[in-house]
Image (cartoon, rainbow, N blue to C red; front, side, top):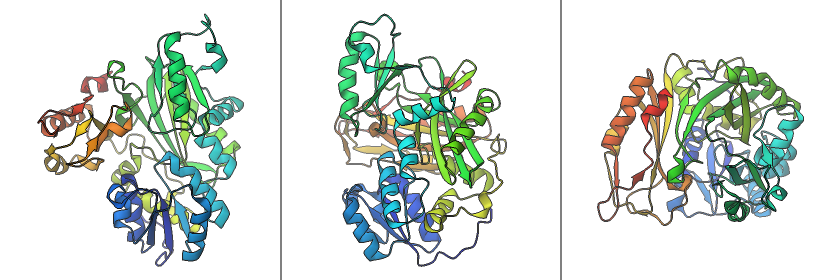
Amino acid sequence: MQQNCENLIGKKLLVIGGAFLHLDLVKAAKRLGVETYVTDYLPLARAPAKQIADHVWNLNITEYDALEERCRREHIDGIMNMYYNPCQRPVQVLCERLGLPCFGTREQYEIFTDKKRFLETCVRYGVDIIHQYREADFAFHNPAVEYPVYVKPSDSRASRGQSICRSYAEVGPAIARARSESTSGEIIIERFMESARDIQLTFLLVDGELHSECVADKYNGKVEENLAGVCVCGIAPSRYRDTVIADALPGIEHMLQAVGLRNAVVFMQAFVDGDRLRVYDPSLRFPAMQYELFIRETIGLDLHEAMVRFALTGRFPDALRGIDTPRSLNGTICLAIFIYIRPGTVSRIIGLEDVRRRKDIIGIECRYGEGDRLENWTYDHRQCIFTLMLRNRDLEEAERTIQDVYKTLYVQDENGNDMIIARFDTAGLRK
């Protein structure tokens, strides 16, 4: 699909965060002739996006004064992050200081990066949320509390610091864990939506209008494996796309417009609870499911390049105006499979190239390589070694693909033991 043709050759782009998913941003900028810079505190070996950038800075993403001075000295034309929660506010702070394009104001970023502020905003505009508890409700054995409850930081990432509590005795330690992972020290306690279907929603706002959105069903790990808070599979389009989600979209769109967002990517999660959609956990970024790869595969639109153009010009490409992601993704379904490992040293990875050669695999993210070591059980996305993006004709074909992947792909520790855990049960796709 044709994008606008504004010449960006020679422009300078700073990507905040050198992690794996930002590789696509750096590659997109390079395709457009943009000079690329990447910064974070990590060494080159642990920051893949730095490895392909034209320029590397080792400044921490929150060293605002030093970053501002360096950006002015280098005449940086745009700053961006599209995947990682900790990088969102630094982008806004620096863009505000330097007068560069950004998805939103400081207040808007606070709403969409702080879960508590977001929930307050939802209530204000009549968007359904999960039932909330106060910390004071757990000062004693409160008969009004319905267990299980879910305790999490208000502003953390990657499922860190989150706990399911099935009794009063478990709440105190869970609060301490959540607070230790929260930058602000704020926490959220809510009803645990044990049997509700989890949903991911991604919206694209262009000049205040919703021009594209993608909704996906999310399948989490098993409670007995302590992975109920992490995604093991995402599938788009959602089976609820034309029912519960369609009913909730006008209210969500009204809220996004009411808080003043005009040009932004907005990601949030939700539960289907009967005939209601209860939203939670927002951000101004793409999801880890990488729906932008699915957009590129189905309608030929490169959203990575579109985001680079916005960061450098303050305008989205003309190709984004008036488009709507096909509800059925051109008759196909797209899946993201997250593969987790137990702690240990990754000694050998078997079958990765065979999986990569499959025509129905449109992308693979690999977080750990041979020789890397995972020290501890964290029960969150830090234990994810691979994310696989699949495109299939139907659910039956998707089941076969996932099963073939599990039969082909192995990760062994130094003793030859299998490290992969939490394999997705494909029978769940039919539930």
